[in-house]
Length: 71
Image 1: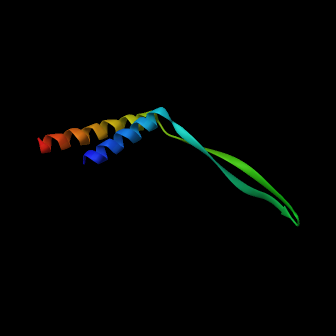
Image 2 (image 1 turned 120 degrees about the horizontal axis):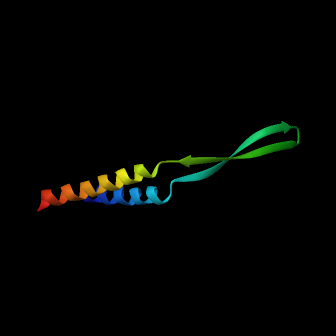
Image 3 (image 1 turned 180 degrees about the horizontal axis):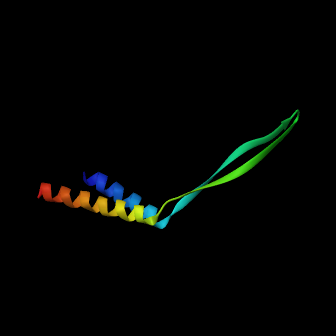
């Protein structure tokens, strides 16, 4: 449980600092014999920093409840 809490805290911090990421895909627009035309499309994936805060709080809660059961 402690490892799960640490992982949630780290992911929460990353999601608070970076609110999204970008990836690129290529799409074939035209294929006329030897001529091929490709188009690159940028896709931005965005999330709210509130999700990071929730994961951070959940990770801390996992670590605290694990500590109470051991001690």
